[in-house]
Image 1 (spheres, rainbow, N blue to C red):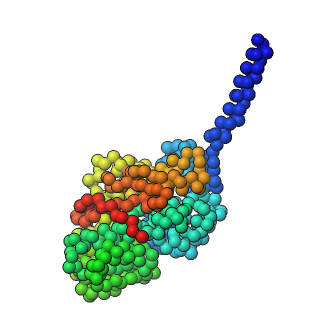
Image 2 (image 1 turned 180 degrees about the vertical axis):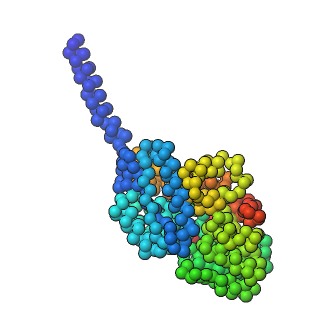
Amino acid sequence: MSAVRFQVAALWTALALCTAMSSPALAQKKYDSGASDTEIRIGNIMPYSGPASAYAAIGKAEEAYFRKVNAEGGINGRKIKFISYDDAYSPPKTVEQARKLVESDGVLLIFGSLGTSTNGAIREYMNEKKVPQLFVASGASKWNDPKQYPWTMGWQPSYASEARIYAKYIMKEKPDGKIGVLYQNDDFGKDYLKGLKDGLGPKASMIVLEDSYDTSEPAIDEHVVKLKASGADVFISITTPKFAAQAIKKAAEINWRPVHIVSNVSASVGGVIEPAGLEVSQGLLSASYTKDGSDPQWNADDGMKKFYDFLAQYDPKANKLDAGVVFGYAAAQTMVKVLQMCGDDLTRENVMRQAASLKDFEPDTLLPGIRINTAPDNFAPIEQLQMMRFKGRKWQLFGEIISSEMGH
């Protein structure tokens, strides 16, 4: 019997050894550059200076959100190291900073970098290097091209889809209108203009003047004067915050009162409306997918309560009226969700796999009913918006949430 007992004991010992050897293999942690047992390195590029510096609030809110996550124990026990550089909204500088982040800082991914032309300048590089360029802070439709650029994904609704919503609105509410368009002379402006024309379809002849400006121009007053002279009674301002505020001011100065639509990227009360002047901003139109931090209607909203608590604790200097703060919070929340989904497989490939499998995710600061969904063949996380009108000190939402087909 003792021999049998010995054999059984030997068998159990062997099994125990096998298990001990195989379990680390089963639960093996997988890492690429920028990830370890203790840390996840995330790169980011923002215009902290230059013509688009109004958007710096986004990067600051993201940094504060990751600080909150770290204070609460990190992601699956790992702390986020957020490395954010300034590119002054200049594409050559963006390229320099992206190389630094990937080649010197060894980040796992680049997240939430701002701008269309700036992100366009690094897209080839990121895809060649197979480093995720995730949740680009720009609404260009080109970020939704998983076949050609499998490492690049947008986040916000595309400019083209937003412009199509405005086209629908104008055709319904002002079918005999004459449209004057002021647009930024870059991918952002041209993408929007194309979406507007696609949306108007056979009615594209309603556009009486398309006038472009360059971000290097100190002021756009002359363009606004020219648009008024064209006879336009609908003014679509495809501008970034500084120029959007100038256009609102100038239109009032020259007593031009068209139906005035500003793009969502320039609908911030703190960043655009207040600098332009509340009085002259009454009746402005735009569309949104995020809650407005200045609007008391959200005071009892669970998501916004969390947002206000976050601001009080981690970003007390932030202006809650600035839409960039609301945006940065929701984008960072989406990034954290993806990293949580990655578990212990923090390879760049798995990061992209998880980013492309988000289902009905609702960040705290998105409008009720707007959800984030992605798939391997759909890199457009948000495809819904709601129209809004500026009244008093805040935007008022009206109509239904509109889902926009992503046309290419």
